[in-house]
Image (cartoon, rainbow, N blue to C red; front, side, top):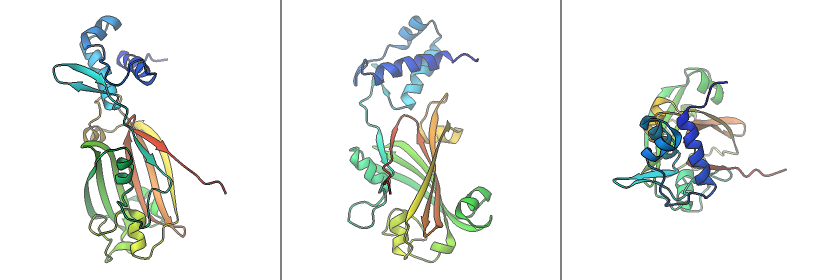
Length: 249
């Protein structure tokens, strides 16, 4: 079996000490020089080990001082009841999740008309080439990039309506927007996988160049069995807690 790279071994050891509470919030990590001596590795290996923990949001560097354990502030993503129907307050699921964590939610978005490729067409139950609204998002919590999402909606449902452009109307979030045009979402399906981060995701989420991993959620909303939106959601590993509450019939 191939050996685990030294920087991942060091990162795993430090991670264990942080998660066990041996290294508490505010504690200073061993310096790069200390790690080099303790593990008999190069400075580059020591840097990579610390970079992994920074990418997971477990530690932070302080200029001229060193690297310290961060206070645990993982954003909790609640999959049950994430989209409100009215009731006041922000209807964006991300805004609500960030608010519950005491963080300020902001996001960047880019919407454009596109055509569904075979993968997206299959998920939406339409022929390849069907016109869709494609919206790419980058979500930030307290200014830190923490989630990417690319959504697709059939224009046959939204074109010419007040919610055609996802960020262009008063309603926010898929359920609230569809409600506004008389399409009642009654179900969603999510499939979660774990994989290595792609180059563009590393850059967009500020992840370490080596061994960054992400959770990918393939989500589709349905109205009476008809897919009305599908999205690929990318979450950096270690920065999220995923919570699912499922009613039992």
